[in-house]
Length: 400
Image 1 (cartoon, rainbow, N blue to C red):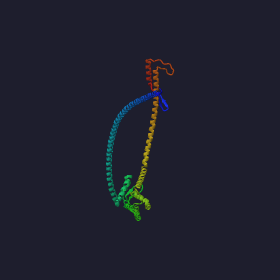
Image 2 (tube, helix red, strand yellow):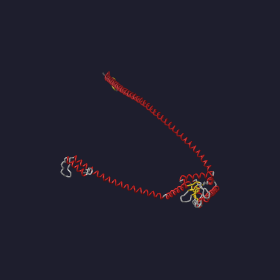
Image 3 (cartoon, helix red, strand yellow):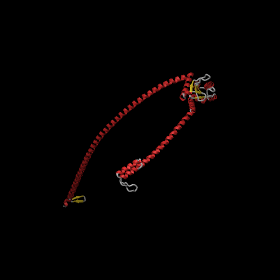
Image 4 (cartoon, rainbow, N blue to C red):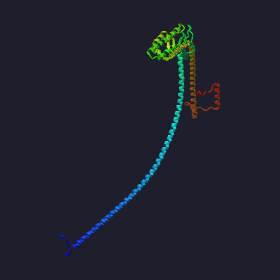
């Protein structure tokens, strides 16, 4: 036994023990390797299971993803179809609106063109009227440039105002006075001398005043206006103011409101001269007012002249009113009598109604009295004969 011992340095080892140790270590090593292999296989199996689970999970997720993708595809297809349909609808509506707008625009354009043509026609007519008016203005200017034609224009305007306001027997145009002068118009005032109206139109000096640019030119034209108008005033006062034949005041008619305003604004001395000469300068408006005043005076005089006839007619009218009052009173009496008769008729009708009710209710008592016996037929006949002999008939309306 001792010979089989193995000495290693200072340590002595038993071969059998060493063999057992080696065998034990190898067994342990084998067990360890076996455990490692088992653990590895377990891990591999778990990893494989996990991988299988992951694979199945991935497959389910892939299937779900596939379903979702298919759903998304279907939704996208439906959405695309809806989008295309809505786009088509919108395109159709836009096309329809565009067509309507184009039709409306064309209609409005045609209407505008027609209105434009009408306005152009109106403008053409207005242009023609303006051309005619310009020609008339030129003709009027030519008329006003001539003194005789200008006097005829003023006289025509004055005659138009007088003819529109006064009766024909109240005026005379171009009448001859006792001094062989002929004023433009004589107004025949009632119970008074005639009123003279003469039409003057001092246009040249006023036109020269408007066209003057220098102070000397304006001064000269003002002097000319004073001379022309003063000459007209003096001529009217000397020719037409005749004592006992015409009024002591005459009217000088100026057929232009502008010239009348210029006279009042810039030439007060001429107005004072006219007042001293008893000549009143009137414009168309002032002449119309004066003529209306004279018309009122004439009407007042006519009323005074017809005062007797008016009084007579008023007396006739009062008589008619008195007779009307008497007849109304008689009618009132008749109405009163008719009212009384109607009241009596109503009373009789009430009595007849009450008796009818009593007959209907078989109530023949009258004021608590005992009902009378029925009379026989002969008695009724005798009563009727007696009534006839007395000459009276029963009055049903009076309650008999």
